[in-house]
Amino acid sequence: MKNISRREFLRNSALLSAGLTILPSHVMGRSFGFTAPSDKLNIAGIGIGGMGRRNLSNMSTENIVALCDVDWKYAAKTFNDYPNAKKFKDWREMFDKMGKSIDAVMVATPDHSHAGITAHAITLGKHCYTQKPLTHSVYESRLLTNLAKKYKVATQMGNQGNSFDWTRRIAEWIQDGAIGEVTEVYCWTDRPIWPQGLQEPSPQQCPKDLDWELFIGPAKMRPYNAAYTPWNWRGFYDFGTGALGDMACHIMDPIFLALDLKYPTAVFGSSSLSNLYSPPIAEEVIYTFPARKNKGKVKMPEVKVHWYDGGLLPERPKELADGEMMGDENGGIIFVGSKGKIMTGCYGMNPTLLPVARMKDYKEPTPIYRRVEGGHGDIWNTNAHEQDWIRACKESPENRTESSSNFSFSGPFNEMVVMGVLAVRLGGPQGLHRELKWDGENMKFTNISPTDKIKIVTLDNYEVIDGDPRFDRRFAEFNALDMANEWIKHTYENGFSLPAMPVI
Image 1 (cartoon, rainbow, N blue to C red):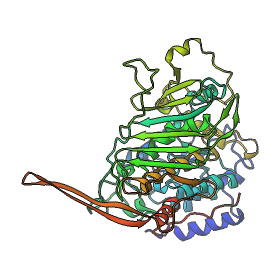
Image 2: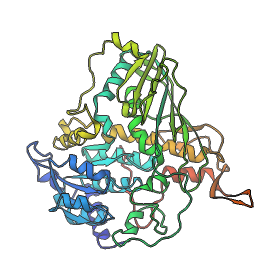
Image 3: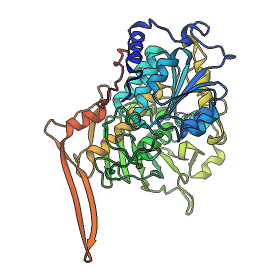
Image 4: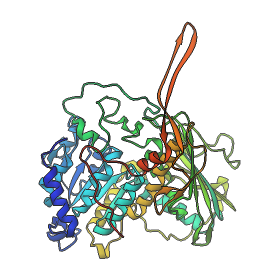
């Protein structure tokens, strides 16, 4: 752990949290609380070697003034893109040295460090664009939601499909009564496309360009191995959230909007063999949401939302013709209503009533949801999601039209997603063997007793000796409630911490 800036950074953060004694430039130096649309934001990028580079490119209408990454070899192309930007490895040092000249922050680090960076940036008054999944844990999502409300900054989770027209069209169809009352939804993805179900890697020599301690951040320290970084961290629980965390923030987004969802009341997870270190190769999660108030022309009864990944698929709708693809090659959604079905591709793309022939005479309802400029066409060739956030950053909090996936929407949404990860960890092949009851307001499972135990695989070896298969599968036993509480609200290690939860 580096001490070069931590003390000063924490001191300044404490002053700001205590009452904004020191005010950031965008509060005092930019037109008394907002940046004029004709002015450019000063943006800092943190985690810039992968998706962060694409996000920054989509923000290049503004001033990219600072860049931060723990792996300078992986980040080299982005450093070259913005040669005048200041370079850092430690985001705390960057905030300490450049906080007064930064208006907004883009965060695209591994999942486990999203919350710490974003939370501290918000307490410094910085607008935040944070990649999906918004956070690694349920508690972190609630924290970012409440901090954004308290500090009135513009926020956006990086699930770019949220800014596209098809998400709004799906919601408008359903709320207009196109398929009646929705009671079941099925969604799936082709992920993971990275290794999962992995055992604990053995130690290796760390490359000189990578600051391993900063990569570990708030997670438990362990030796370097190339399996963790720069990209396959998604396949390890301490750093990523597997296929569910990676893709549900895209695929389930139209469901969350259209059905006006918030906290589920129950969840059930099952999977291929899971272990202590790495998400399973394939899993199914079933969320139960309570009845909600009517939306538009339809009632919102209790609904079950089914998630599949790792090649698992829901039952094929009988309305599909032979040879007709269910969803698209990357995944999809099927809404089941009392009067029909809607099918989409991944990200909610290309929605259609089923059977498809129903679309011939279907008259779309009058739009009721705000469209995002540029939110149509090729999802990978538009900067609509980033630019919608930039627009919101430049508006005063009192008159702001919030960006499409601001934290008041994406925070509760992300809570639901990462809670599903816990359902698999607690209810896998050696788990609790029950549907878990969830108290969303208080962020806790209500039917795990203090004496419940779970067994988790710690070693799983296989070899053939003289033509005979031999298995060496070992388990460790854990207190289920202790593990659930730790996974809901992580213990931060190595001197990292989160700001306190605001009272909202």
